[in-house]
Length: 469
Image (cartoon, rainbow, N blue to C red; front, side):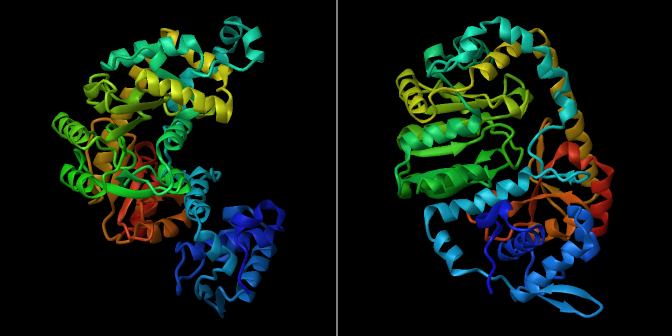
């Protein structure tokens, strides 16, 4: 009998059934393929901290569903995926397509105790420890206790928008407070832009490889998503021009700096070419800059060169302060900012003024500048050390920035990084395989996104020696 996926049942099923669903889902999604040997009972028991009897019961369920078969004295082997009709129907709709991205996000957000998260999207907690939130709470309360019991402005907390005007000015981006809308992180900023500009069936361009939650948001909106190949110096302008001529899209979502997942930065020459194409083809560029604080203020940004004429700039403090604060922002022309603020009010009423006040206090403290200096120093050192280690292993690195939280790496002997990620899980090492970052995740990729700090973990180094050859 075909299994009902974990996505549908959640936590209501018994433990053994949930484990069987999880393994069955991984088989459905190609993590394990027909003929692959599954991890042993002991390995799974240790990995999930379950009793051995629980794991045995889960394997019995998988055998009864015809998904795996036992081989005496050897273990359990995959027979093939079991996709029920219900799931096939779900996947034919917009939500079903987006749910594949949601599952990938769940996998990325897992925090297995003792595991090495090489695919992690965040800097190490210790890098951010000097911006402890408890230091600022009393100052936040003193800025106006009464206002903390009410909804905030549709634009967001005014003093923080004033602080952002100064912060963007340091980049060379001139904006007035009325051009800024505070959001619940950069992801809500993307949601607002998509809701405003993207009707069902619209064609939207994205970086490829690129930010996979964005792909899911666009698919959920019913958009036709097309990837623009990312090169080491920015988007492939020849491919971009061809797509603009053929598809006539309205939007192009891109990351100029510290690109996720490649870690590449756009060059000035490439940035000017992209903006020229945008003007010629009436293209609006949405520039996501979540790692702005990790880069020099003089770094090239499309929005700085364009001054928000054909660009929308999205920023966030999740990577440099705390993801728990969930404070982001949109910078754009004032008419669009007003419309997006209205849309935000309709959907969410307002953001969290407490969190916005917290970020404002942190920005106004002199400690913030010192924090950024230390953050960039740590990132530069980790990047140099990670590059040296990967070079010593004979790896191919896509782009080499002096400061990059991510490196896009092809390991020697690895043709499908998804298969290799499954092998490394047995060593308690979690990777971010290249398929995750493609518009079409079915295409095989030999690339992996690597967090530079995690690359330096000796446990990862021991694991790749044993599996990448």
